Image (cartoon, rainbow, N blue to C red; front, side):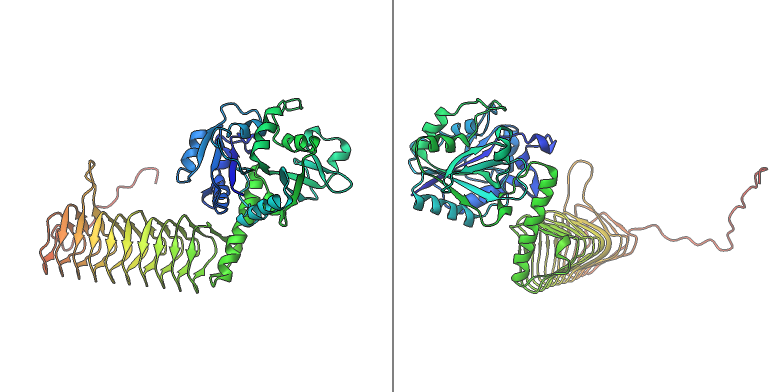
Length: 461
């Protein structure tokens, strides 16, 4: 049977104590809600309705790339009301509706598929995803009959002392026959201590009408860890980080210290690559085989070839690095930078929106911005491409086999021809022809037998 999905992401998340909507808080460089949507999309639902409310625009911005039906809950009146807001978005759909919260970043597609399969096989009107916990604080309890049938779900604030001792909790995820869902939501009242419309009341309505309610106990309780506080956010990230790192190590990646390595789920890393401690790799980064990364390196949304070495405290964002390149230590590669094979970007070098050619070297203490650098170029220490005149950026072109002397200022727009050389300490403002030597500095003057003027002693001395 076809399934549609409602993801509830309208809550403010008061316990986060943040002006940022709860589901937008990042986990390993990605908004929390994106993990839920990715898991849902892998079960191939007919439709996905994402219910937003508090900070709706920020939520939309965070997952603008996801194909969902946006539903606005203008007034937050509880989870039952939030689900009912999605009715129009799912108009005409007659299959099962999967409902889950947007703060379940650890939920897996496998669990969702098994949950839906169990619902279909049992022919239940309502199924709920549950877990058995030692610490049930903050969760609604699942009340079963002596035969094990689900009778109702009771929120903790409304539970009796006996009900609070129950160990089976309601995760907040449901699978419901759509015709019954809409009828039941119309009957939900707000006669509880919170004065809200509770989605779990759908379970109670089904049970009171003699309809079958199925409880599906998850095998890994961690998947149902909801994020309500910063502490739970950190706990969730830790679990996800370990999951990702374990998978990468099984695929042939070495992590010297997995506990201090942070990698987002969209990253791919080739075999025999070594990741040193305190390394962060985020976004859609692709790293090839046989690389050495770190320690203390940050990489995001970059392509890195095979046998690349990225040394201590380097920062790389939206860069394209080809095979056998050496980066760092203390290098900064900014967006739209391309480093071709065999090149070297050394310590305290910043490269921005530039192309560095095959086997070219920028060994240390340089800024290369808006530049095209050819093959076999050596750029001496302290070289700066002066690309900005206060109004706009200009390009510097350095052709093949050029030697740039140390402490050269290249004032763009500028072209240095093939095989040219610049003298150390030069300020180059005009194009340099191929094979030429360009020197742009004051002539040295030597005054022999010169003495400094002696200091006058102060009376206090």
